[in-house]
Length: 160
Image 1 (cartoon, rainbow, N blue to C red):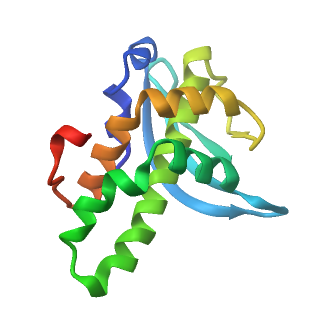
Image 2 (image 1 turned 135 degrees about the vertical axis):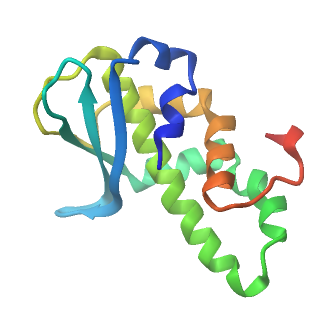
């Protein structure tokens, strides 16, 4: 589902040996009221088996990125095409897909540095600045991915 991010960024060319598949999320993190987690299956070509990587992100960071990336404004035109009775469903899906994409960005930052072949968890406080930078660098790709996942066609492609 989120394999789209695998080939997006120039920085991603450094980690083609990894195959990443979205597994599930976002889900609340037990014991952390301000955090959600997405889980990805990661396999490197040279490994016999893949691993699972849980990627946590704070809801406050999601909110801040949503605001600085102007997500609501940039998606508004596309959501106008949705039936009024379905708008809330689409808005919920936007949030889920956005969080999944941010978690994937955070995972990609980790992959660039290398990854041990063991199941692991990226804590909420890890790589926050790096995630902010990576998410802003991928803003257009993230927006296109959200529109694609929701089967929405942007009415203003140049605004992406």
